[in-house]
Length: 197
Image (cartoon, rainbow, N blue to C red; front, side):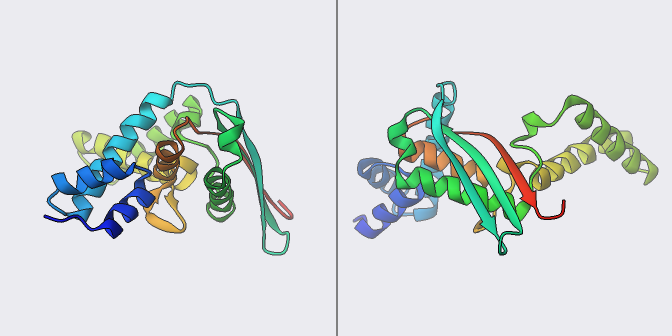
């Protein structure tokens, strides 16, 4: 089956994969774009996992101010080299993350940053609520896990759906940038400011 060059280009833009990888994924999927996209996303996640141990000490500080100066965010986004930090792709990622912080108001970078005592308090709170509703013990554990995941989506930046494309999480966005730029990228920290708070 002949592979469409436009689909190869679109796959490359979405995943950061090379021309040959995108073409091969489409050929292996018999031209099915969605299947090829899924395969390439899995590959890019594997590449990102390999890079996650590498030191990321370069990067930039990004600011975003919205609503006539009433709400703003300050973000530290790190990568491995200053060369990548100066690329438009990296700068656009930083801008999108700062915009997300202003719009979605996360409290933590990831679920790993949630203090142990707070996690234990939330589990107890969710378990007590499920028990009070008369749920069976084996179901309570699943309910608690589901409510924790929901809490992470609401309060942890990397778990949140991206405001410009809710089919992706912020972690998906960062992973795609890692695959495209070939370096480890780390959201180090952020602060959100709102006038009067």
